[in-house]
Image (cartoon, rainbow, N blue to C red; front, side):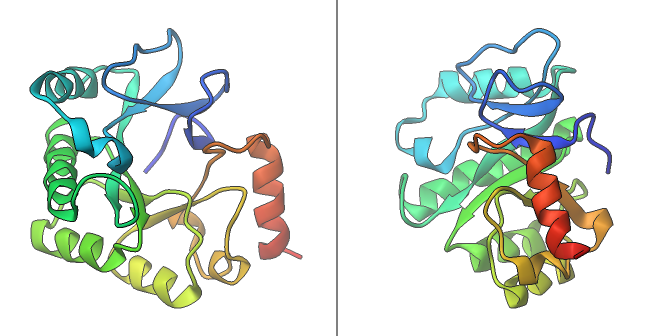
Length: 189
């Protein structure tokens, strides 16, 4: 899987050579690449117009991924509602043939179970991953890709194959090259 940028996930709209996350009500930035989705924290007040905007933006050529989406057990709507909205994103990802960028907090079992049930053809990327090596291996065994940012588990970083590893700035003030250098410092001391 190839992204047109090194930084596959950021919320900083001024970043260059990055996939900028936007929400359905936001406009695309001319000349930039985007992901579009409904964050789990925003799942409490979703209406039909938000879903329609999401569907419209998803097929735009500047949109290279769907998300961030997912499940967060600490914040957002009920888990059932978050799962319904997550499944909507999965269906959209499959329809437009674009990878899925996933936000997951304390719901990895649910995410893995859904992936096993639906058997998607498009890649699923866990963004901002900080989990322990055991969870890392479980995700890798289930076909996930993993994106690391400023904060990461160095033991987990060492077991992620290079063809399943991505880098991101997310909400960090650090630039992507510094983040990559920090991660690679653990991988290649």
